[in-house]
Image (cartoon, rainbow, N blue to C red; front, side):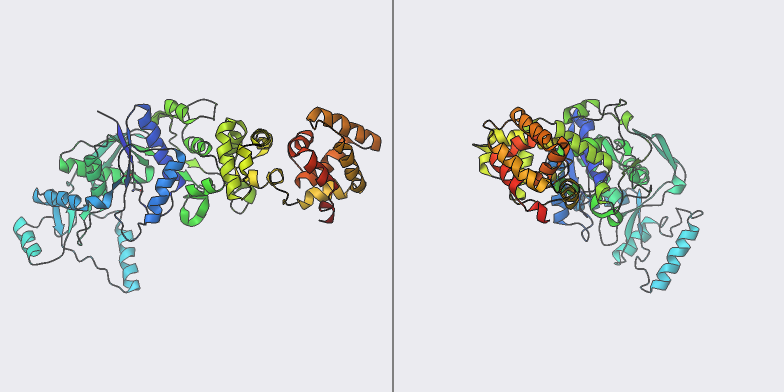
Length: 497
Ligand code: GLU
């Protein structure tokens, strides 16, 4: 049988990184065996589903390079089929009409009292305790015909167990006594989640369901629906959760943007790096290595490599330097530093464009300069944003000076105010403005002034780039070229900061 998996997000918010990881694992799992990866938008909660969210899901998958193989299925399109199936189960006596009035009292205190009683009763509640469960067909039909509203519930057997072999957790079972007669169809005719998912998974011929561990309880219920329908359930694999640093739930509500996939795209992550990071969030190939391209991930991926313990997403709230998982940032830096330059250049172009720093010459007359400069500055960068921020001085005359750098490397050495313009005059005489030629001149200059080379270099770095750190200064001179280097060494702007 062909392997067919699906990613089935509910479009009720931005794509959560946990969902993105679920999509990725489905993708890797099926690509490895040449199966199909399908996308189903579970938009049955009409109040909470939005088109914007659907768009963000589609964009997020495209960004991560997870292409799906068939047209998107929108679950709401199948609602009438779901209803028919519920009615069929009712007809076959596998489901029953529940005429219990659904409206709860509007008074908040009474509502709370009812909820409290439900909580207290939970342990001992008899799940089959419904007055309409054993109503005769005639009586039930009569009530329905008279217009009494009803929900349709699955008639779960009095005793027994559901079980399945989970691809991650192994053999799992659950006693029927722990499963209520679940509602399939609400009294307003709205099909509920478990029914809709089972019907669609059958219809889409899904062979393997890979989803979050938070769906384990649903899986047992869904198996009962498969049985009632006389269909073989798919294989199931549940993924451990991704937790917040305090081991609590990682949620959009509490943690905001840090859990939204688009945040990473917008913060200058390289998609391949973030995909690599997500893959390692709860999975490993059982080796030390951590950098994998997509092809390698597909080759190495297996359910056996999924950890049974929950993964932790390590970030420090309220600390801008550690705003997201340090490993994610490290991995992004690693990609920026080592990826083929030709793959990086279009990403840098996009970044410079959005910062209004892009010039067409970078792909024309200044192409060689641009490539060399990107290659030089990428060594210390963490995100693509760094190209337009820390790297700004390479692409614009309008860049900021870091006050700490100015204080430490410039103002602490007042002699530099005269020396740097003097060095500029000296550099002006260098015909061939290359690393080696510059080295001789600058070394000699420092020697003449009887100062450490570092003092000259750090001072020069501060006025040339506005920063305290960066690539080798000789390479920076060369990258900026004679004219800009001379102008900036002579400029007093930094001294007036
Ligand atoms: N729509 C469900 C969710 O977003 C997933 C359903 C499934 O994978 O079966 O949590």
